Image (tube, rainbow, N blue to C red; front, side, top):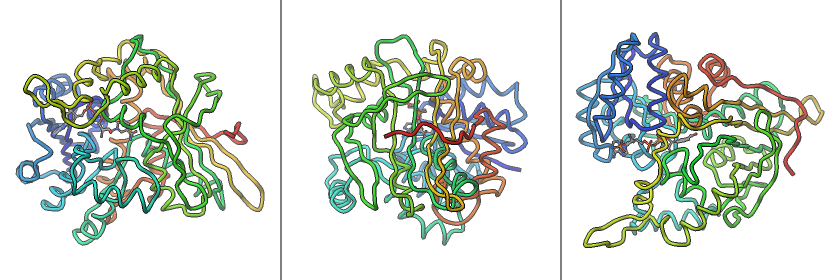
Length: 419
Ligand code: NDP
């Protein structure tokens, strides 16, 4: 009997919950707990009659460890799937340690208040030491490794698509196609069109912070940081066509650089249209991407949170988004003394996702791997004490599950490389 506590009930969680309910043999019982319990109740209402999975709901403030501990002690889940925001990663990990349950998430820890002097001191020291300035990094969660080991618990970090599936692709390439991998290019292409002048496909705050930050890549053992959007390439994506893509910092680079030290260069590219970039630059220039609080009419407001309230809810984009995503990795390296290159990718259709789970492909490509990650931990395929990313386990059962649960992938030999 497996019981999973899912925290958060936004775009990604909705897909993961639909998928858990399709997979009742593994997910016998789930609890959806979030800040706004009405969203959890509405989803339960929609799904309960169509699934053998028993669903319950609760209200929880995941910033509050005591509240989390009380909820976990009451529900007694085997694992917690954190689909709230990266801000809640550490409080939820603390609560899992206190209550003895496994932990799974899709994005690494990011501080909500980047002006906090205590956080800033550690952050600035890390920028200096490692050479990249992203607000998020794995050090905070990797620091829990000993405690999870001692408790005999698994923490599986970053089981979305990117990070998540992209790192599983790397482990799969290493296991089946290469003696040594020399370069990895992760390409994230969204060829979808939602018809709005400007909207983000997932949480606007997280998305805009990621895209407006400096880019970076890992080369010959070092981080190379570049101004935001300053490296651009064109690529002809299968199923989508020719797109502009830009080099970004991305969290799986950090984990892959640590866990596959033989790889000489790791880069991440994401496609953006010109209109998206122009809107974003304008919002940044007028101060609406600021993450610090300002006073307005006697009230404290954080501009990026106010902007989030103005933008379309990512969950509402589903019915109107058409087109496909293509996300995958190009690997080059050596096999049996010969050079080899392969491209592993998945193509996902926005409208097909909507028909299946009433969500667009961005939430779908994250929510399905979140369910699969939770399944790997619950069924024991990926259960070992400590804190791990998805490249640190046998990729085969996860790759099989991707084919089975809606994200089929292909391997292409000798793809066009990115210069
Ligand atoms: P949403 O903003 O749609 O959903 C977040 C949910 O978390 C909401 O239900 C929100 O509640 C809830 N929440 C926020 N704060 C708290 C809190 N303190 N206590 C309890 N619940 C809280 O985000 P997404 O679904 O788009 O993203 C979810 C996660 O997935 C994020 O961490 C994001 O970074 C990650 N992600 C990962 C990707 C990958 O490929 N690895 C890709 C895309 C996203 P409320 O309804 O009240 O706002």
